[in-house]
Length: 376
Image 1 (tube, rainbow, N blue to C red):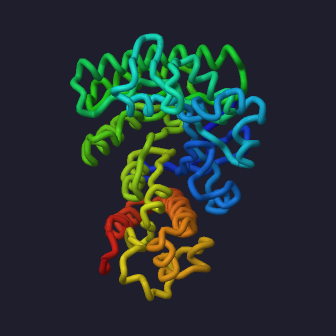
Image 2 (image 1 turned 180 degrees about the vertical axis):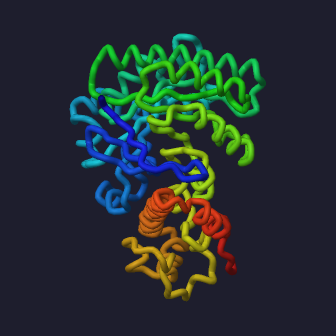
């Protein structure tokens, strides 16, 4: 079996702590996966990512299919060898990126037709070609190709997309099994904001032999309250003995909200994206390093943090780097932000094991939602 999930503890809130047993070792959950879209995490090399505590990354099938392409991955022995990454890699299927190109793609039963933004060549992303590309990449966990839609889509359109996602899931499994590579495959529950469709989707997919399940179609404009409601409904419909992955979420408070609702795995570009914009996540709130109030600040980004950045550099120095648009500034903020997310997951895991997740939630939620004030 390419992946086995061991549930270690369930908190009274529903939050779960577990272990992903994989071909590359064990990963503790709940887990946050930094995003290595193009087989690299912006501003960081693999050993720096490892030092943050991260043991699993997410890479993007759509982008890697277009560049460098399957031939390069096969020649260079896969993504782990290319990146010099000893941990796990999960690859998405490319469905969300297709959704993000509404004027440049055509969805048919066969798959998604679109043009490459590199050379305008015509491309087909189908369940079969998505799996073949993920097999060439050599990821440890693959995702089925799904049909992503906006959360405001009406019920008929949502149902149509969900049913096609189900048919594509069956085809994805067949494609995976036709070329045994030892890679796990997750199904993706869809159904938009409609509870009965979520139930129908979960019922269909959990009859299939996936190693885990993702909750898709959230964080696409539905708002926090509805997202939490659908997330809780969806996780409650999934097997307790398999991992649950919420795709594309989110802020530190989003993670608190959704771990509370039984999610085991997350990914998001925010830690590195916000670093590029001069923001640092801390356990006293979101800090905008470019504010002039930090120009003479000789303290660390976060006094409670023991990362490479907080033990060596001051807010004043980071302020100087970011105001001057020096690449090192965004690089150091990325190291700190990715570490912050890993430490947050460790705090949640420990609280779940002790049965005190609600107390941690009540302590951290108001702190993490703050934005530190200062002069511009």
